[in-house]
Length: 459
Image (cartoon, rainbow, N blue to C red; front, side, top):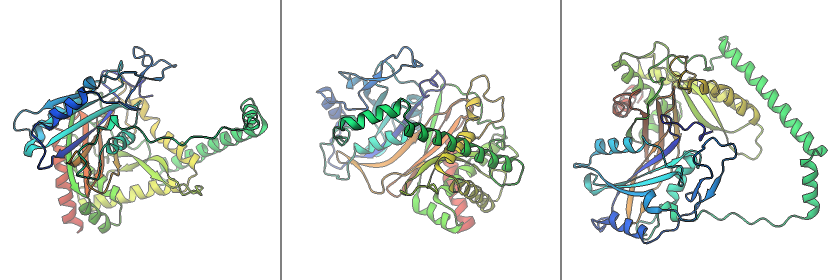
């Protein structure tokens, strides 16, 4: 799917920006030494050594990953320096440009930039990887796997040079069991019955979900539906140019607001995003009269899950951008997300899958270049929150200060807001189309102002 969606304007790679403060005894040429170590020879483990079998034909139905025998590490890892003074604005400009060109599909589809010259002697790592190879959550976990909790560990290799965890070896199966599996695969009664039951469950789930959506459309339920999102300047055809901005807020401040409004951490993240979007669109004289709608990836426990596992689905929630008062706005957001989550909690796993598909499938139409901006959007913006480690991490003595995610704008969705929690802070990453979402940095600044405004209103 991600290879099929790849185009000049819709580049399907995700990325992470990691900011570090070096240890007091770190030499000035630390990154030069690191590059010298890599040139001397460095192993590259899966998935970072995988490339496409047919890079000239991304949409090949027989496409597959194959191992690259000798990965050119010096090509994938590049050293970059910021112009003086190397402040946050200069860093944002550089990252925007790096995120605005595609990966090389004739090689393993990832690259890493060692960035020096930041204020206070700091440095940064920018790593991007195509979504077809790993998703954003997995990529972040692999990056974190390359760090350590020990500030005295000065020999830590980079993330791609660390072997993945070994899979447990499976014992050889008896021949009788193999023959039984073969019978079931060729139409054995038990296998066919289970498959038929699964199909019936899925059809029944789809009918149940469809009835729920019909009730919401008819006004019998307060559930937000794909027909409620207003037309907005955020939902236009995009260009290949990118903008990236960041904001860092303290987790405890957000939790205090959540407790005060009887909401969740994610509710406050939505409220902060809604407030910044409202102010931003008002300045552009482009705020829709109807409230903006956000699509939220959520993890929920299903009613039939005896093992206590989680299910990942999608919900739509109102951002209440039509409400001026911040206290009333967050109350409306809390009510909207609560209704959506209650809808999921009453579903089986099959129903959650059907529900999420029905919510998001219409958005595929607006991602077509000739359609984007001409049809009413299914939702206006994607907002997601990925939890990260609670304690500080290090790389060869340098402390990780912040971890910012970068995501994928597509036609009809010119802005993506994703945040990572790390060591008592929440790191917001705003990724947008430079031409569809001008002055993107304002959204990051307004998010910080929004927290102050919420604290005054509800604390």
